[in-house]
Length: 245
Ligand SMILES: Nc1ncnc2c1ncn2[C@@H]1O[C@H](COP(=O)(O)OP(=O)(O)O)[C@@H](O)[C@H]1O
Ligand SMILES: O=C(O)C1=C[C@@H](OP(=O)(O)O)[C@@H](O)[C@H](O)C1
Ligand SMILES: [Mg+2]
Image (cartoon, rainbow, N blue to C red):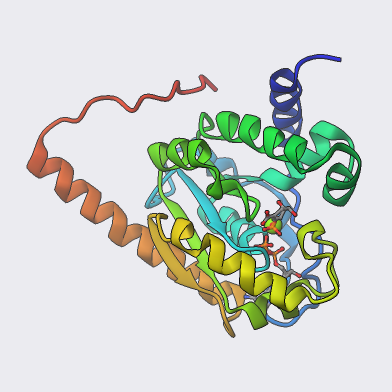
């Protein structure tokens, strides 16, 4: 079998070549935007320069159930950017669902896949990246992501997370008392999530409103970056290798 890095690259190319796919769930669900007819088409203005965006690359981090996959998809439609959900990419690479990867290959293997995927998606241009809840926790992933562009962290209370995840299969929440597990894990991770670039709350708000806030906050972030660049003169090139697409 080819090495993991090659399989990741292959799966990413296949994902980007196909029609953009919304995350599962969300259809007719309260709080999430129904899909419009054109939502699966990636607008041709992707690289045309006609669309003004606050950023050409952005990642979404945060705890399970905060809405990264759903909001990331909607944000990618709003900004006319590619959409990559790292969990979905891993399921393509391994050929198994996330619960199967955890059960059959182990969490260590899943985290190794995440690291490969982060190495790849940080070289992409024109993309919204929805991370898994644990991706940003690993220090090297975090360093690469924050070095590439803004990382928006979504937040929700343990109760909201519980409500949004109770009918799905999150391997880390397969316990007798998922709400306690959510509380403990969230406490452990909170200080790390705080290291993101921007922070947006998702409790009790429809996904559309969250997307609007993310875009507004990204514009404010962009203006601050521009001002900083004007004041401090030219800055060295970022250290990642830009993919030539
Ligand atoms: N703002 C929201 N309001 C209500 N439900 C939401 C909202 N955002 C996401 N959801 C739903 O909650 C569930 C978890 O969302 P998801 O995007 O998978 O979260 P994550 O990727 O952070 O784990 C999905 O069923 C999704 O449709
Ligand atoms: O928090 C975590 O460690 C995980 C979050 C999940 O993604 P979502 O945050 O999209 O549910 C998925 O990557 C895996 O089950 C592990
Ligand atoms: Mg997700």
